[in-house]
Image (cartoon, rainbow, N blue to C red; front, top):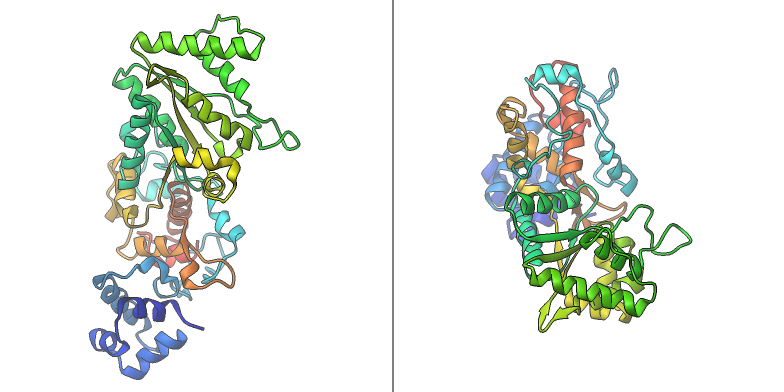
Length: 398
């Protein structure tokens, strides 16, 4: 089986002998590491650190080299379960194992005292736009949502669970209020919304029309006939726009929208005053919506051609600045909590490779919620074991 390290060397065009000379290992020792993941019995930790340093300098994505970054055996057990030895970390995880990292964690009093925190920096941690860490991906999503609201665009913000999609929607509303923009945000209720009525309640275009009308005039008596109802809606939007307002239809959990409703969204965009659109549409969804829109399904072709798909990307190389930002809000320094090898270990820990998959199949789940829970778990473990900081060994055991 081709190891991830061997694949990385091939991708970067690096010869084994070149790396062996750079890190001070013999050709045969390097060959055993690269081809079979067999490490020398002495100074293995130093060899790992030297190889990681060499590959980082050559531009390798260290996070995908889990067997290189994460310790496979623990010398001392700051385990996440008191009294148990820290477990070995498998290279391949099932999706269920990866999802376990999403379980909510609470920072213990012991950990808060150890790291000088008055409360957890990862719980109820976003109370204003200043609390949102501005990664390049977040900055682009923010700008795209603002543009959609101000110019009546059509956008779908897609991200995995815990990527910060809802935070982006809340951030947009907070900025609209803070900047006193004349934008009316319409958010239909999506409680129990599903793609079909067998599983829950579908959100139909008539429900969206009612939400728009109620937001613009809570006292309005909506017409009973569909023709009159939509004419009434059109007139209300036109009058509101002529009064200087913009309108944004913001739908969360949009991956649960029925196909018929997705198609009907185009009709809302076609409501105009002359050549000017009267409303924009922003969908907040999990990747299932992206898969539906990029499929060959002819029913959603018209939507796909008009909707800009924007994806919230994993933190990955923004992981350390993200943690610095979170801790900095509580006047705690990153370097007082984490050892230098911790960030690489967190990224490596949050790489998911499907069981039986290849290194090329790896994907990062290094999203804010997952990072928060993993880091909280690791800080609890370090404090419980009396370790002054969180390092790669602690991360690997969590």
